[in-house]
Length: 103
Image (cartoon, rainbow, N blue to C red):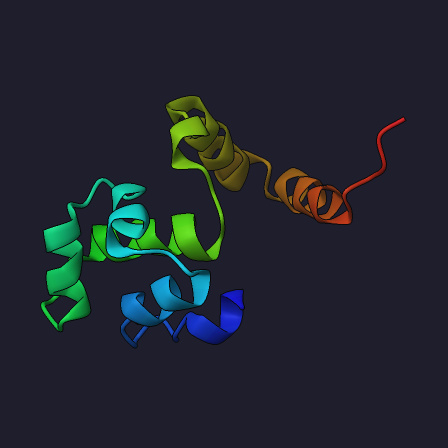
């Protein structure tokens, strides 16, 4: 479901379609982003959704990231690896995707 709902970066995200496919009401869906139900309703009705809200929507409802668990230091580590250890970052991403079995 993830990728078929997510549009190309130049296209708008169809929040209503994502919400409906997830079987959530507006309150459930938008509260996870810190958006009120009425604000979410306006976005679903065609009002321009700010880019930060679009990105949060993608992270929370498409990528299934619990933003309550993300911390600044997580971003600092990623930015360090991108700048100074790109090969290490590439290796770590590969390992994370492989999801090794726990002993």
